[in-house]
Length: 223
Image (tube, rainbow, N blue to C red; front, side, top):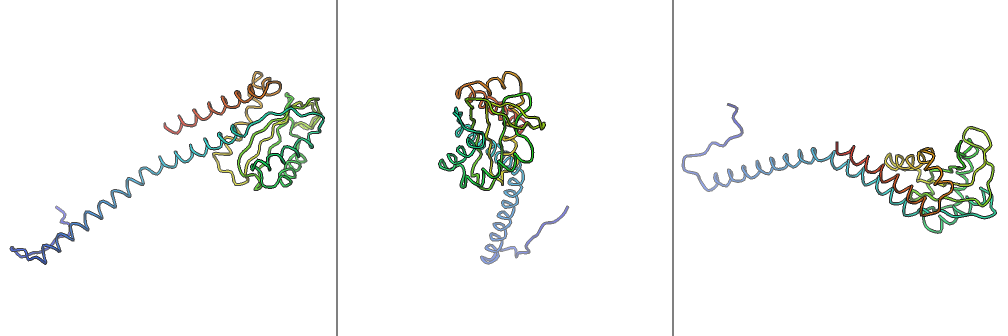
């Protein structure tokens, strides 16, 4: 049998020896407690990480839904409406510098069309240090406009979707943003709502889609 640390004491304990033993036992139990605490912390770390990831997912969804709006735009070009939209987002504290974001959206557009082929929607999206929190807003044009599609072909659009995120977005935030993009190619029914629905109807569609995504995410975390 392995012997642990031990004391040699005289048969009649002196006060000194008794105190030494007590201190030794207290130190030993404190060390054991600490080790137990550390191993519990190790065990709980994955659970804590999962909760933090879920919090980041839900925070992103809350920002997108809280800031959502659909506005009918009259007599303005896509570029004018994007500039106006960014300035308004700057006033409401979503963006710190509208010009930086407008520039980034133009740059994205110059790299390739942003019209979603087979729809009447254009997705203008950017990530920038000038964006403080994720944002989703939509703009319905009073008259169709022609923009380059993602496939390089010119196409007519009646709706601009503006999706913005900070440049240091974490993995969870990016997952939610791409989930919003996937709604633009989901199915005919969703597309009809995005292209023609009123603000309430579009909001219901987007929130139902993101809630369903959150449920799936949460369930997969628990497995």
